[in-house]
Length: 490
Image 1 (tube, rainbow, N blue to C red):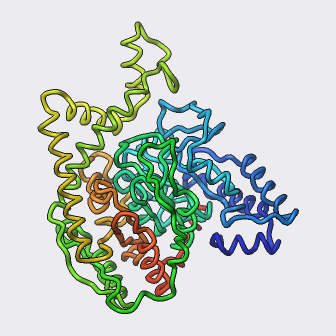
Image 2: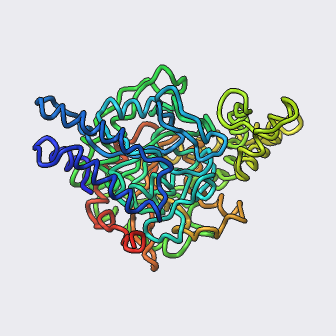
Image 3: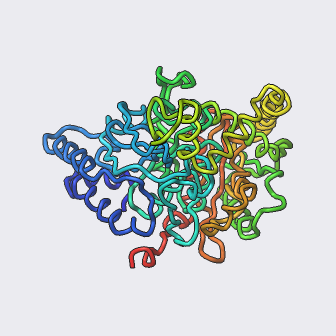
């Protein structure tokens, strides 16, 4: 499937219609979904109607924006009016939101064609998309492996060209890690740049919506469309949004003007040798392209994982208290009294990973342990942010591998939660500090599985990340490599 700008040109030149492009995407979904299982629901009729509206505008000579007629997928934890929003959980199995999230409303206003809702780990809690109550999504590069998580459905849909771009949410790496596993571009924006209104909350101080794409340019175009101040979100940043595509230069700025720091603490035990080798070659190429490379230290980087697994479950235990069988969502069919109904509804409606995190969070927030765990974690979070501030006083961008390994096999880590949590070792500190970060392909391992490089920017430096990532992307052919889907189709 072509890029956003290529499809836009085809539409305005009337070489192809929006309906034709949408039908092609829907046919591919029908062909691949029996094996991939990227989507929880596909809204074919609604998508065709949205495409017809775009074609009608083109026929009357009306000017259309870059996203008009572009097939897009949305992670199923963003509210979509009249379309089920399950969060991958049984407890929201029949929930149909009466309102539209800000990001999906912006997509509708831009004329985008929403193909459906993608699979995810239940309530975005997981690193493999194996925790969904409905299905396990396969990695298009190897269907016996996971696509990463929690936004695995969106990453797999983009990698397999079931859609052009997709939206995901990132609480501790849930866009960047699956982007790495599936060989696509994944961007986690600065906290507050994209409205969270209508995003079903996991951990409110960490969640952020962002784009998946096959190219950096497509990521910049999609972020441009969804970013911006929203009075409905109290954490939304009231800042002007620049044109991110203007930063997409053919070459880096003159030698020495872009300083990239390699985070010393990310090169240690647990880093796969193939990942290290690919990342090292990527850094060498960036240096050849004119970047100044130096090693920097973020001493508290390694404390990101334990800090996250106190703060995120604590916020989750509060956010998920609303699912009680009274207001909306699943309710147990049999109960003796109100208290019993609460308990049975939550026991039957939540999966094991969600229950585990609720219990951890409730324990950390309890009267006897609040200071020992939650308060201490918040103090460490401040120290992690201070480390990033000191690093950005020396360099413009930080770089490290996105994930310590490539995609692991389905079922390989389901019985070992701690091993699964380590998949987000490189990405979590970024969320704790509220910074923007981008993952893009930088090579493949011996088994042909994608490897991702993570570029981290200072607050609101998305444009700089796009600039460097685009130059790197155009200097190699990693992004042009596509998974061989013969095994999926036949």
